[in-house]
Image (cartoon, rainbow, N blue to C red; front, side):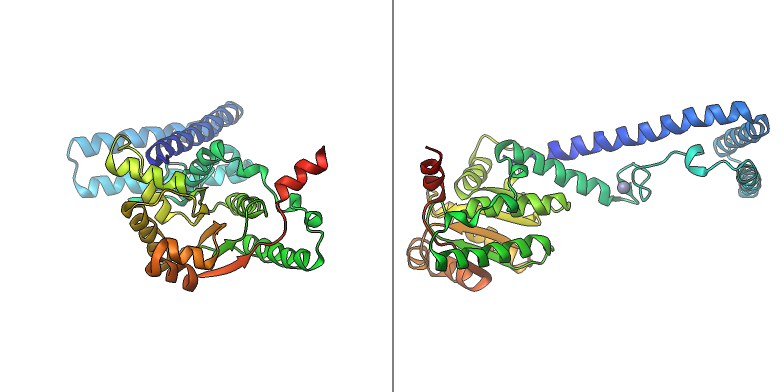
Length: 320
Ligand SMILES: [Zn+2]
């Protein structure tokens, strides 16, 4: 289901393209400037010649002293060029490549590590991949209407849920608490979940949303059989926010129960937030998942109870 290898390749391609664009633009600008200023061209030629000298010296096994001399010369010429650029009032940004990421100069690598720009892009692409299945980018808090709660007490409760979840999305961090959305079908759990996903994805956090069934099926397939390229389980454990929708409707086996426990427990130990939504009551959850898993649900999540009548039915009825 989630193929981070694809996202990584695509991200690397995009970063290489950024670099290419930055360098091509700089090359064109520079060409125009050098035509206007032959004295600058003269210095550039000196720099070029000195580069060649360095390479020849390294290949021919020159002494350290000789190489040092070439380096000193280089620094002097470069300083001359910078002085001339100042004098001619040429901005460095129009003369040198303007990289999207200054830290790695659009290589995606800093030292031996992935640059932050690469990891951010991988996350964004994984999110895009997810949005093909669930268009989270179409869900907004603003579209959640409290008009569907005619009962005042229910409306107040839902207003509270709305405010708390909006606040959660606005202040989201990698160590935000985990939330458990409990309540019947059609009360807006999915709408709120996807609105949170949308809001925090826009801030660059890595968020994964799907039904519990779909996630578990993907993990099962990758574990037992045909899909060896996917790494859904790792993505589920490592993403900044995991949203498991509709817990309780999935087909439970010993394997899926242990995967579920493993995901929830590992995320809890690493203080990574998870949002679960379920139609089941606490008693039903305990019966279905057993004491060990239920104690995680009860102890590690802030519970929000969704109340009211089925919004989907009401919308259908009103539009008739
Ligand atoms: Zn970078």
